Amino acid sequence: MTFPVRVEVIDPELDEVIRDTGRCEIDYHSPAGRGWLQGQIMSRLLSGLALKITPLARPRPDPKTGARR
Image 1 (cartoon, rainbow, N blue to C red):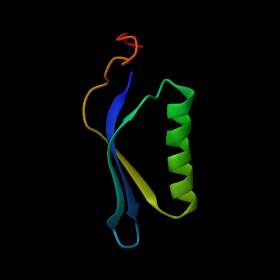
Image 2: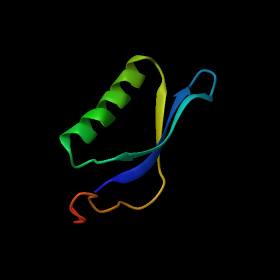
Image 3: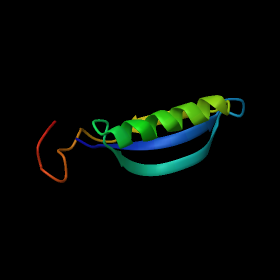
C-alpha cells in the first residue's frame, strides 16, 4: 500500500518551514520506501531540523497488483 503524505522540513529555532516537498507517495511496506523515510528522518535530526509528515488520505492499494497488503 502507498500512503500519500506531505513532508515539510522545519527549523525549530525560527519555527518556520524551510522546505516543503509537497505531496509524495510512500510505500512503507517496501525496503526502498522505509529506507527513504528513515534517511529523511536521520538526516534532518543530525542537521538539527525537524521533519513533519502529514498524511493526506487513507492508504491506497498497491498500484501494480491492486491488492491490499
